[in-house]
Length: 276
Image (cartoon, rainbow, N blue to C red; front, side):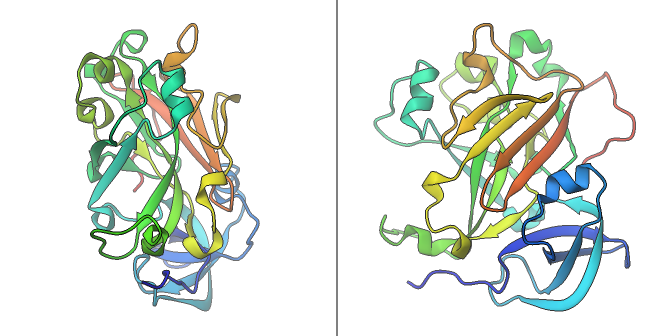
């Protein structure tokens, strides 16, 4: 099976200032950290991509549009389902004081959990008070599968990858550690799992195992490496997300910075809304 090849290298989804409609495009500046630039209200220009993000035959045009509102690179209806792998790094399992699993630990997130850059990470009342329920950050390399796959060998696995995007696997640790099934703690509420801002084509990342990953909460660097080490609930004392926190995850190779704000349900936050 041949690898997936796209005409674009970095893809963003956005509302254009020129049309007030949703488009996909490739940033004109190949080195620009899109999430950081958007947060700082800098001008972002993109060459419109004609077609769908999931269609490798989609073509980059010469039409240049200006980003008015930055969205997640994929719509929820394009995602369908989020399949997740837990304890997939041995050092992460060790820091969490959990045994290395004999078989993959799988869990799912419904598409309703997904949000985009600058959107609210919601902490529902069912997960409050936060010092008990321990809402947690976790930078994740998110893999977008680009074609149907079944009985794929390890050797051929990357041929099915369309691209990669940064994600923040928000968890509610009290619920996760209380039961054997992780689904409730990982998908407790809508609008809790940010992805974005840039989908980077697989052709640009020959070895996804060595990508640098970082997480910052209110400017403090809490994760820094190529695995998921450094999550909040294992720290002494534990660190947990709370109302008003600024959470930023960053992955190299052009994915850039994904920025979101935490809001505890019932406390309100004027001017913020879900962005897909």
